[in-house]
Length: 180
Image (cartoon, rainbow, N blue to C red; front, side):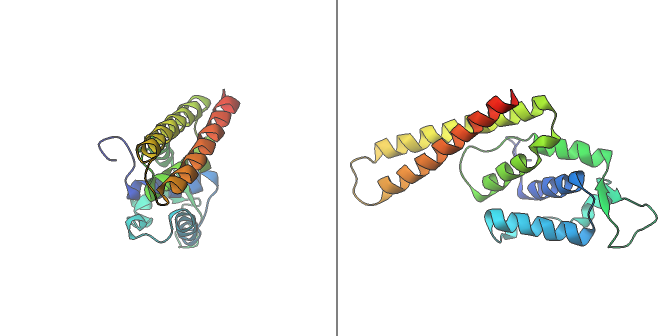
C-alpha cells in the first residue's frame, strides 16, 4: 500500500483474484482469464496492472486447491482464511480522490466485492466513496468557475465531468441509504 493506505496496482490485482475465488472456486487458467478480462474492460491494457503472477497467491498461502490431492493446473482453487483476511484488508483500503485508471479499477473492485464485507464495513466503504465523490465534485466545480471566462471547449468538458460526478455522488448516496 501507498503511505496514504491506498492500493498499489499489484494489490488491486491481488484483491481481484482473492475476491473472485471468495465468490467461487476457479482453476488457475479461469482465474487468470477473469483477472485479465475485468482489468482490461475497466482500464484497458496496462503494463502497470500485470503485477506479480497469480501463482504467488498459492506460495503465500492465500489460496489453495479445493482438493489438496489434486495439484494440477486445472484443479479448482479457493481462498484460504488467511486469503480472506487479506482480501478484507485490501477491500477496506482508501481510494485516492483524483480520477485515474487505477482509482476506477479500485472503485469497481469495491463495488464488485462490497457484499463480502460485513454490514458496517459496507457502510464505511460507501461513505468513503461518497466523500471522495463530493470532493471531486467540489474540485471540478472550482476549476469550472476559475476558467469561466475562457474560450474553447474546456467548459463543455468540465460540464460533462461535473454531470457524471454528480450522478455518481447521487448514486452512492442512494446506496448508502439502502445499506443504512
